[in-house]
Length: 202
Image 1 (cartoon, one colour):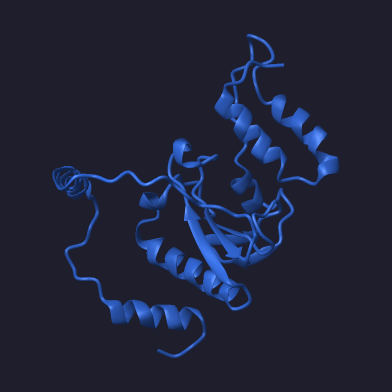
Image 2 (cartoon, one colour; image 1 turned 135 degrees about the vertical axis):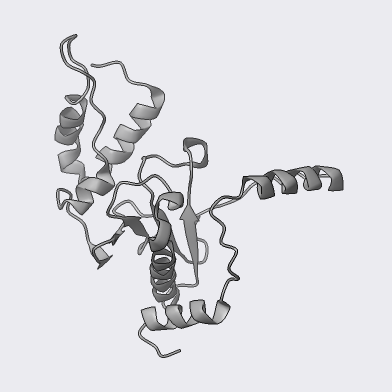
């Protein structure tokens, strides 16, 4: 077996779990064969499952698709109806979406609103970086419907800060802001786009 890092093992496990149980052993062997087996073969990266979905190489239940984005049902959901929304292009995060970001946010909101119509609540989860839970180098948003006592938990222990620490943090964040438009955010225009995306008149 090739020597794999802990992160690679986590990625492989997550990828293999996207397949039906009876197919997982064969898929695991296929994935492992992509890594170094001798000194003559360069190491290859595991194929991105979201790109495979986009290419039609993984069977999915599509909720939405257009030329830019795909939304599918998660086959190992936190709750039934858990949807994955991601760009067809292999990009790591929202910074790479540029002018398509508003459309992506409207699509995410529309799917969340649909789920909310027959669920008690909805979480929209987006992770950046492995420490935050990002398993693959492809941007994906999880839209998770919530039901009472569903055992889905998002929690953290609060870490109160002094006012001076808050000021320092605020300055760091403000200094690091990039790509922020000087044009004021038009709330009414955004609401109109949301309504139109849901098939309603503003």
